[in-house]
Length: 279
Image (cartoon, rainbow, N blue to C red):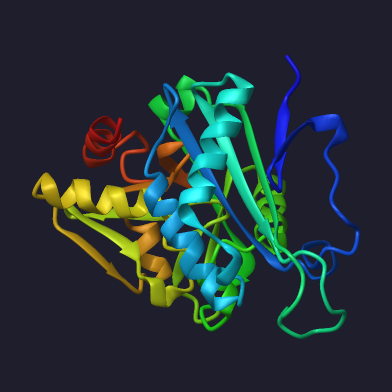
């Protein structure tokens, strides 16, 4: 079965999918995306993903052409057409063709792209034993407009992940420009210290992740004290447990940072509990 891509109202075979080379998304990285996961044909937390997209689009002057109901229908149309009940779904919104130059668009039509691919997950061993992470040199800028939105400009994360792999790690951990822990290259990060759950606040320059939000709600429902704030690097190094979250991997334990074990070096009790209740 050929993979079908949704582009501006049409489903086309992947090999035939085309967009204009003059799209402002191509020229300037002017666009947004959301990555979602479906379970048995149901897209988890779709309403939260679309709400975040609309909020981000408003910051970039793109919101007028977006309709969350139409986007939801297009996502489910694409999901059904590709026959992957358990899928990785990416919704991309580009600014489209318009006036040339570095001005906000007043003309032109947005480019909407949706792909629904077969879900590929990390190994069972990764969830059971955890992964290794490395603190990298690439920084998040907490004062940048892009720090709080899921921009298609992902170069910082690509460079950070390359740094982590070169250091022999599976995942990058980025600090912000003030030296506080921000997030992983493609995920939010959580620490467990003395039974309390800690995660960087949005002021730290992070993307406010949908899975992050769900995990905070679940933790509080379980009676686990959860705090958002600035996290110094030494707190990361002394944490009892560390894990990361995103919509595809759910909750992934990090059992080593910079080659040294986190806590006991095994998946911790609170991490394991949150992995279970999330699933």
